[in-house]
Image (tube, rainbow over all chains, first blue to last red; front, side):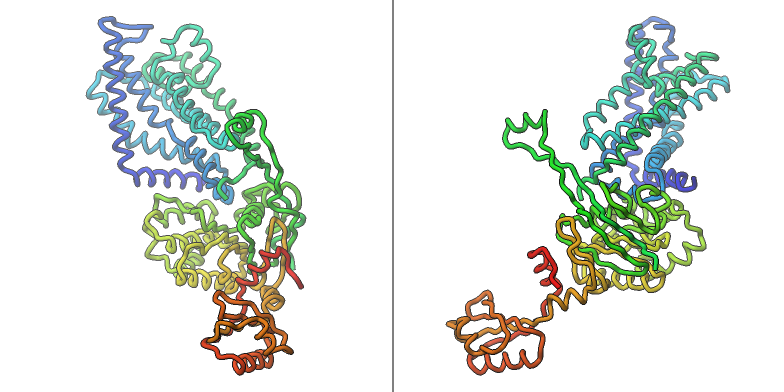
Length: 263
Length: 338
């Protein structure tokens, strides 16, 4: 276990090595939150609430969704794809650890770094500028903490799945890009799921994406409370367990047909 | 003694496809492709004993890297048996890789953006090396490779020679009994090469570390290895002592004469020394002739005496056939005699 924790530390060091990325990240996220704040302000116009969500709740939703994204979002799909393409994955096979667990830990290191040095301070600044309501109940905060851990797990699982597909497709940049758009759209980052037409909401109940952004954001804004929140977390747990199956299968096949590209 | 590497009838096939030519061909390739099965490693067998330093050589594409990748558990063999350190590399990967060290000259295994010592610290945790063992072993390694001053620099700021020495230290961090080196001296200057060679020799003497070395630089092999395994088109074509290879192929000497008279011919030369066992080849100018003879004092003296007495010369050189030439001859002919 010590080796996996050490990897988180190494990721912290790597994040610190590229300070420009860190600063530009803050800028991009603030612009996004600002843009969505004004967009939703215009959509709401004079009305108090749409689909049972008030203006303040919406602003909070947008801010939290983006700040949670800083935690669960990572580029390990791209990294895995690149390591496979360049043949660097060979080096990973001569180390006494599980490659996928190690990649997850790198993602976690990146996520924790951004949560501590980016989301928390960012949220405080955003709360000063925009009208945002924080829940007073400890219960909500507890549910939210559990929910974003599962957001991270499910998003990382989907990323690993996309990355490992490189073993079979050799070049899957297009797939990675498509996956990113699908997650932003279907996870409820850009638009809460309850705003989608009924049939689309039905469909999305059978897909894992809303577990990534919609569930934690709804919990944070008190949109889900009590049994609704526990049910939402159960939905996340089920998907986290289900996604292990295809990952293990693909990984097993991938190891069998590993061809180290580039010598 | 127990073999540290035992390979029997090892084979690896790759499926490759050939593209059809032209636009029409490219469209046909969308639907059906021509597959060909190519054996990269073709039923090789060999054993290595503990403490040996073995040179593993062959042309580009001879199957060296593929077989090393099977020995280190990166690739699954198509068929055959591999046992390294008493384990099957692919089946017991995590336990197996604890006992080996690998350096790929063309790929870095250190983390690019962070200081060397952070990479070492991570590897120490990864290989579960105790503080005491690390201190005893690594202090010595760092000192003999002279990388102490580099430890706090990020890898991307190191020169190739500096990086290579750090890679070597990283591969030896857990003090493995077996070390695979895939072209460790590629692109390095003479001084760094010497330093690395001396270090490897020392590790071998001190810990009885077994080393399997692939390289295109034969001076590495000459300096380090007693034994060579030579591959060509996926098969082992020679496995034995380097000295043996030399004596079978390179027992002769070459004497190069530069004559004052440019009208010299092979006929004239063989008339001069008709009873001596000598072969004449013209050099790159028409007054230069090279005589290949056995490495025998009386023959060499007699030849030089007769030639110099009969024709005026401006220059003379005596060369031993180098290992490089021997290897080149073998590659060209594809088999080893004797």
